[in-house]
Length: 169
Image 1 (cartoon, rainbow, N blue to C red):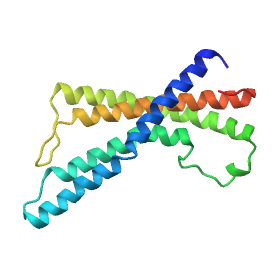
Image 2 (cartoon, rainbow, N blue to C red):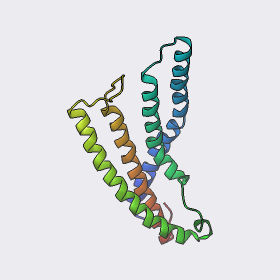
Image 3 (tube, rainbow, N blue to C red):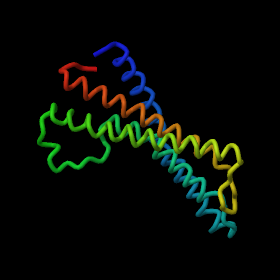
Image 4 (spheres, rainbow, N blue to C red):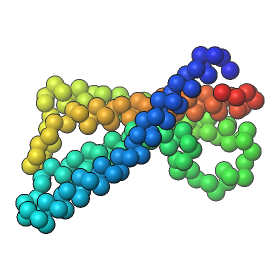
């Protein structure tokens, strides 16, 4: 494999690994926010209006920033009816094809996400909830997560091509 491809895979895998390991602990932050929501409703009889929306935003960040890590580890959902019986070479062929579809999908998603983020920044878009937070921060995080997933998908494609060539990355 070309050195630039090997270097790309190592950098992208390392970045997504580090972000994924940090995002693993995001579940505890969500638990804390939802726990505060429960406590504030029970103890103070005044619900914290921001808690549900913050928990939703945290879940979006958790899911989208943790997705590339999941793809890297191969823990993404796969239809394993036939896949587990295939040789590594056949798996690499099928994965190469399906990752191309994923790359196309993520490209379209990123294009729409950037457009939506720019709109949110330009018009100072807010959520229609009672709390009314600005939407551009979470939309920016969504775009970052989609971009990192796109980079990881390309990394996985390079690894599959290396397997098909009998090389390692």
